[in-house]
Image (cartoon, rainbow, N blue to C red; front, top):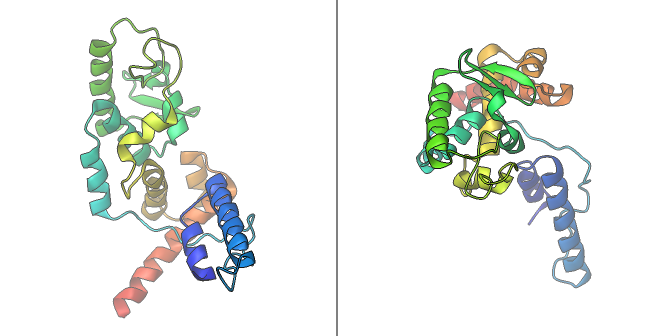
Length: 226
């Protein structure tokens, strides 16, 4: 394994996950070199705090189709839409309450930001609420998404349960969320201010999406010329 191999791998990770994985790799290769199992530590010149992000890439259509096929329950289909259409994080989906859904005005509030309910999400929310009422008619849990474990409590569903249907798919909920934000940058132009306003992104993250949106057409043109 080379330094480039490590960089290629960590570029697929973000935040704490990137740091945790890089720390683990550094520890592993330090031990392997000390015990004579490798001659060179490929992580020795990679700083844990160093952001070596590559250009964001859109998800392939077949990967999205596979995730759609994996969403076989009303809850899973709604979760998929919340990530893929509204760029909601898993924890944000889990903490949504019934008060965050305004069917009459077709509004959905995610992390304090009100968003219009598109036709697809509106139908999926309506389907889920109907299923919810039939399955747990007496529940006092005010969270939008509940399951057998939380219906008799007031607790939110766990992140593991929320993301379980997409586990093992190339288009995970996190990748779908990122892809939605990249799509916005490609469709409406690489404007960091617009991205920050729509999704509540910080300046640095919004710039990263904007930079990728500017670079992707150039990359496609270069590949076409080849």
